[in-house]
Length: 234
Image (cartoon, rainbow, N blue to C red):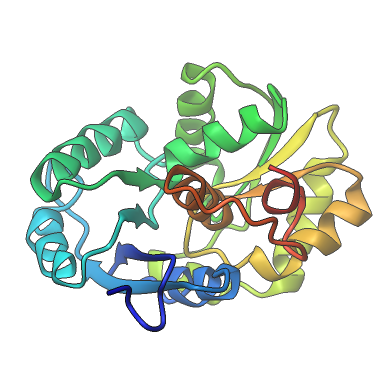
């Protein structure tokens, strides 16, 4: 018998413990017949998170068809590769596909046929250099990058929408094919469509990207209007 509230699919969602943005943003994106079931983990250690697999095994009690990890690790040298390796270990341990926001960003950019991009982050210029290096390693050309310069990881969640709008408009002035946002604690999903209309460019928000990739991988192909071109058209 199918789950009464999730006859189409249960999606597991995992995010760092202090992140208060991933859960409500992915709930906004949820299509009919799908539920998101949440579990948190703590960041740290050489393997991104020491308790990731332990916490995911608890999540598996509700039988999700896939797990979306609401985390980007572009801020550290080689961070995307480290997260990919950890997610590979997790997928092997739990037996369902596992997707993360860093790699989902790359897939989403390719879906909208963008290679020359402008980038919005929650970080300062020193960290942005790592973000740019990770993106260039993945094959993208970074035309502009700017952060909101949140003073701490918890403070990223407190960034105002007007602060985010200002940074998006600033990088949109560059000669780019799309705008990418990294940092899953930066709240952007509710203003994707607004900013796309104002800049004339597709905007890939990392939380939207990882949920898009997860849904499409399990056969949920519904267009999700109101949240930008990626979810509406791909």
